Image 1 (tube, rainbow, N blue to C red):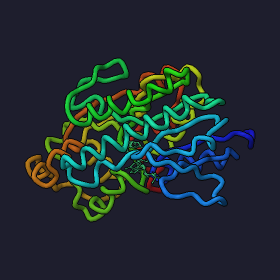
Image 2 (image 1 turned 90 degrees about the vertical axis):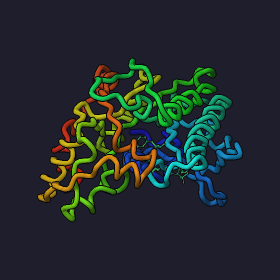
Image 3 (image 1 turned 90 degrees about the horizontal axis):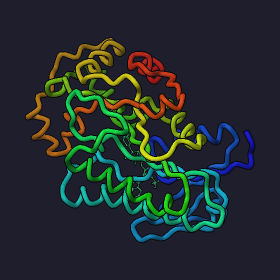
Length: 302
Ligand SMILES: NC(=O)c1ccc[n+]([C@@H]2O[C@H](COP(=O)([O-])OP(=O)(O)OC[C@H]3O[C@@H](n4cnc5c(N)ncnc54)[C@H](OP(=O)(O)O)[C@@H]3O)[C@@H](O)[C@H]2O)c1
């Protein structure tokens, strides 16, 4: 691959951003990281931005090939108080609007803005099969995702291709939900959550990185695109598969009321059900390396 290609990433220090930057760098692509701290003159691959105040060093982004927008305050760290909810929304909407406006105003615009969204868009949908044509659900995450996706408007209005990747639960031992579960399961204290019937739509981090790059490269990929494996599982299946992989028992269920008491509204991250399929990725010919959970866990945890 050409060494003259340059891509830019927001949220580059995060779980997905780190892996994406590593993958591009390994192919000789120059990676510009948008950072929220002051940038010294020697940090040539860092671009200052501050989404909360709308500041950005736009000139450094002239001529980049692709922009990946992965910024946002973590949603599973703090109880969802009104202040935390506001930060969850603002950190996505302000960031997306700022990067979208910025690429819209560049003289040499990127080929695409590939922006994160989440399957939270679909809400709590039982066993219904969901794809990109399904309407949004209801609730805080659904609304957040809609505002988040719409914040990309300045870019598409300026003729830049914009893809909103609706990420499922990203699996990696390095961070996110799986990293949180692993110590509990390794102790033999893992168990089914609530009824265990809620469907979990997941994607292994290496497949997500490949999917993000695929969408960046394929001109036909714009609009909403589900980034989930084609084989979602129930929480019961997930629990059993992870326990089997680790050779640990998973006999301790976590009752719904206990979770709601401990986590408040945030418990919906574990209790909501969404069977999301990657229709657009599959139709475009994207192939998952690990479509099944057992193989994904084997690869991720070896
Ligand atoms: N991981 C998942 O399972 C999952 C599922 C669905 C959707 N997503 C979405 O996909 C994106 C990437 O996920 P991830 O797992 O890589 O997230 P992550 O590890 O939490 O990283 C997100 C990055 O966003 C930046 N950030 C944090 N707080 C911010 C704020 N207040 N304002 C602006 N930027 C802020 C930080 O990067 P800097 O410090 O470098 O700015 C942070 O490293 C996120 O938007 C996330 O919501 C993730």
